[in-house]
Length: 214
Image 1 (cartoon, rainbow, N blue to C red):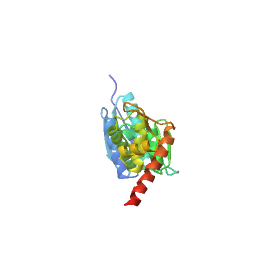
Image 2 (image 1 turned 45 degrees about the horizontal axis):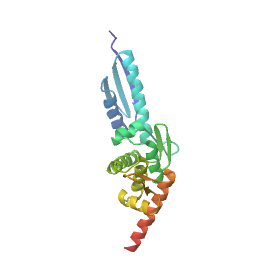
Image 3 (image 1 turned 180 degrees about the vertical axis):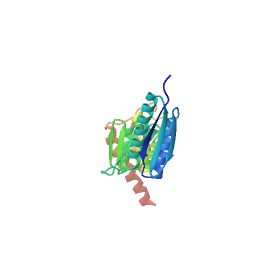
Image 4 (image 1 turned 45 degrees about the vertical axis):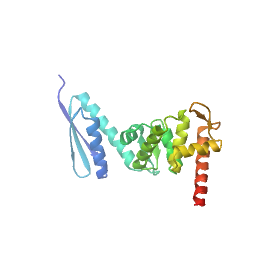
């Protein structure tokens, strides 16, 4: 039978939000471990009980949680936040391609770097989560449009312009940017990024013309 051991780790924190985020993450990810946490003057003191292997695993997990949260809450020297895919999924409760999310943030005017399962951006976590949820909502609404790459183009254009996808699709077809093929399928001769950029430009131009007529 493994000996019951005890180890304490001290986490230095900068804000009440950091405290809340860390404690929530510990409760969620270490629920099967025997832990005790207390807050004392900008420090979280976490005590972990268990076998040597359990304690080692738990402490490594706590350090990882702390690093992930700090990267998400505080900007680095370049004014960037760092989010991993699991954090975005956890906060937004939706699954989204980081490449697509990065494209949306870029078109919104934020600095963005996507690498593997991490996204570095000047956008705050609240904005990233909001856009992830909006993307999923729109993609679900136009699930009948095929193929998926066309749905993604329409979805991104809708988020950037604020125009509904049906109206965007009509503009895309009228301008020859997207063509109807058959049986609910659409296509474009241009690369996806170029199609998206051209479509956004046409939609905004159309919206400005309609506004001028009012």
